Image 1 (tube, rainbow, N blue to C red):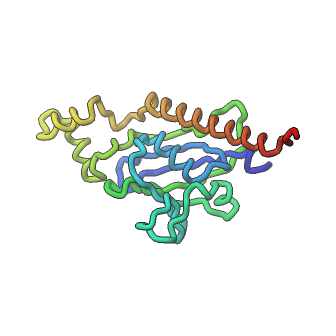
Image 2 (image 1 turned 180 degrees about the vertical axis):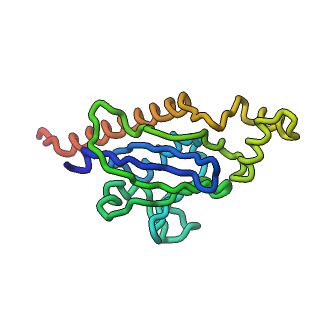
Image 3 (image 1 turned 180 degrees about the horizontal axis):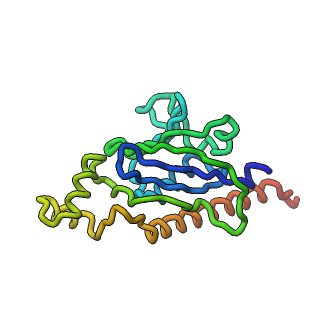
Amino acid sequence: MSRADEIARIRIVLLDVTPQIWRTIEVPSTASLRGLHDAIQAVVPFDNRHLFLFEIGDRRYGIPDREWGADMRDAKNIRIGALIDRGVTELTYTYDFGDDWRFHLTIEEVLPLVEEASYPRLVGGARRGPPEDVGGLPGFEEFLSAMKDSSHPRHTELSGWYGRAFDPAEIDHPEIGVRLAKLVRRCEIGKASRAKNRNKETTPRVP
């Protein structure tokens, strides 16, 4: 079975938060770390407004930038299947260097791709992820306190900022479903475009 016929099941755990916030997703083994970043953004969910970083041993993958040094590798250029081939099963993911959300990722198993399924997809999880730009762990703790207590001094401010109810015990499945559907569609368009370009390159020109 080739990597094109496989998916990787990955568990994603937000560090330093109790009760634990986690997701399990399935993504094609051919997906890049940039694609994995997009999938994580969809299932937490976050809004993809900030920089990110994957760390595997002493290697760092993200968006190359002179400010981050020459050792920052492009996350688009490394595939999940290549990590599996190297025996990598654990990595860390950091999103938004201001709020500093840190996740531990475990590649739990490699499974056959199901033709009728759409990838990436969410297969498990617990609790609602933190809102974008809430202020990291301290800000999230205060946000949770304020949202559940109408007498909290910041209740009106933060409930107005968020704009809707927030139940920390419930995953926002409707929102995640919308985001995953958009991501799947984007992946399908990209795949079709690449196939079309390959066909153009291999089709002989008529003199």
